[in-house]
Length: 125
View (cartoon, helix red, strand yellow):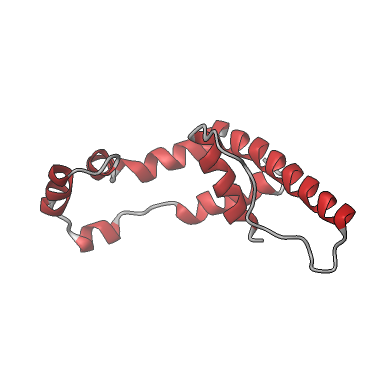
């Protein structure tokens, strides 16, 4: 299991108040007996709950939120059009001027955000 992928899955479900079942698509070892499968399920739920707490911490971290705000400034116009699909939004999005050179020059702190995410997951933040 990739820890960051699991974290962002939990964050997605929790941030959007998903009301379906919450679990990972995982399976116990083939050699597991019934008791071991129950332990596996308990472990998955414990991991989910730990990651849920980490997602809340990530969402509340002022430095992380500042980086997200910085990243999302450039995408403000496009993100308004992509929140919900419509033919009109698709046409407007396609008509937007996108200067790839200018976009590439703008520094985006994705690596710093990634490091801070790892620090939340490791319990440093």
